[in-house]
Amino acid sequence: MGAKTYKVNGMTCNGCANKVKAGVGAVDGIASVEADSATGQVTVTSDGNIDDAIIVRAIQGAGYEAAPA
Image (cartoon, rainbow, N blue to C red; front, side, top):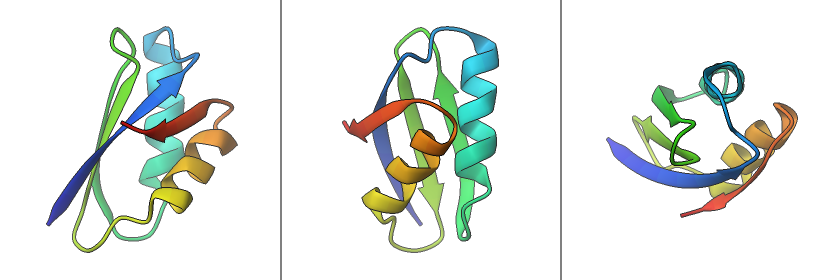
């Protein structure tokens, strides 16, 4: 199981965090997603390798900009 952290710009409240969690959680192979609006970070855990591009696209699809931390 692997985990990676991403920095998300514009995630400022719990509603934002929930939107990001839902978007990333819909990606195949993702075991868990933790989003912290206070720090602007999202931690993704997967059963396999995590493709940064796919996770960043999922976060962008939720309406936010992101990059690996």
